[in-house]
Length: 140
Image (cartoon, rainbow, N blue to C red; front, top):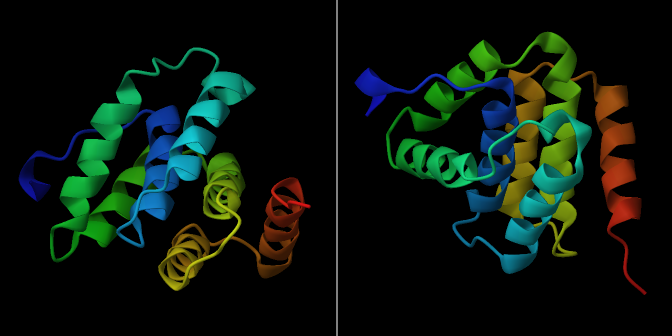
C-alpha cells in the first residue's frame, strides 16, 4: 500500500484526520460518523468538497492503520496536503469527532496527542481547541 499512496486534497486531509480519530479505538461510532458528515456538509472549508470522497479517504486511512508504519505514512500525507494554517483546523475537527459521542476513549486521546505532535500544535492553542470541543458537545 505505501508504494501507491494517493495524494490528498486539503479537504481530504481534514477528513483523514477525522476518520483517524474515529477509527483509533477500533470502534467507529455512529455519533462520530454523523459528526464527520455534519461537518463536511456544513463547514465552509468543505463547500466544494465531493462528499462521496469520504468513503475513499476512509478506506485509505483504514488500510494505513493495517500497516506497520501506517500512522507515520498517514501524517506524511496529511502534512503534504494541508497548508500550515489549516493544522489547527485539522486538530479542531479531530477533537470534535472525539467528543461527538460524549466519551473520550484512551486510544482517541492518544491519537489527538499524536496529531498535536505531528502538526506541531501549540499547547496553549490545543487546550483552547479541546475546551471548545468539550463545550460544544456537552449534554444535559
